[in-house]
Image 1 (cartoon, one colour):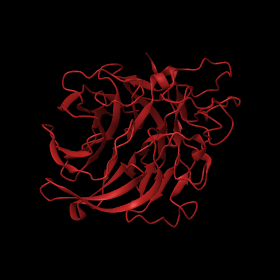
Image 2 (cartoon, rainbow, N blue to C red):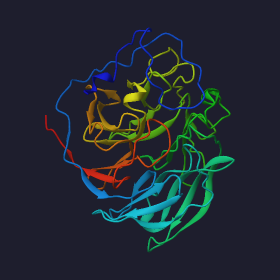
Image 3 (cartoon, rainbow, N blue to C red):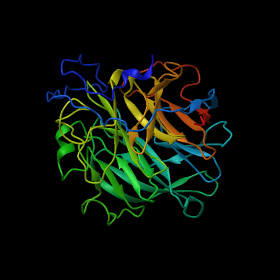
Length: 379
């Protein structure tokens, strides 16, 4: 399948509705008129290509988040067990670091995204997105010097509504040094459009849990109108991008702007007229996007239901070429993609996870982490 199924143009209102990207009780369908994504003004040129995948580790159970440490090794979170594991920089068997306390696993919740502190070499801190039985929260953990244990130090942010589904859960450290957090609407679409709810939002907080002075308001909320954000990445110019799981018509990729509304639940993707338009959309059965990374002029987008890795060439916040699909069906569902210190992509599969978005039958060795080199294509 080629990448042209991902539309950046207006779509007829009569388009057939695709398979839902997330099962459960039905939500109200979007009925507002279709709109167009922003048109590209950048010329299409050579784009980066990928090398052959190399297997780094196997035998993971419902892995979710991934973050790199200064020595090139990586930590990976397991959603259901609540464990954090360490993977050597050169690959090899995963070693247990410890269990994050207070993790409550549900259909989609548990221990989700993790991000190492920019000062990890001295403060040994890792931030995590945790689903609890009563609310979701962002916590700071301290990793022991020998990577053999962890301590839950403090809660940076709580009050995020929990549910069986739609937790969001991605957490990254932006180029501004702050934590950027994607939340889901907790399966209550109206949360995304409600100012007094932290759900269905992009949140931005300092690493001490305080609200940055340059947030659009006095709360952690950076943007609203999101259904379920599981991917956040930054371009070299500081542009912030996010992937968002749609309902039955469109998943989307957005450029994040302070104080902006992205339309959910009145608008889904380009089906509707409210909020900021996405820079790209795709049918949920070909994506159900999770993690996002930026490397060599492209966004690399993990697809769960679509069982592939999408490449979306971008420049200055605009998609400037048709998306390209990689590894279609080769490894099953893909949950997370991150850029390693050497510039390669590390990709986490998600076939042992019992969550929705098109479950895959685990294969021998699942789940696994793969390393893929990104090859620059000169102009």
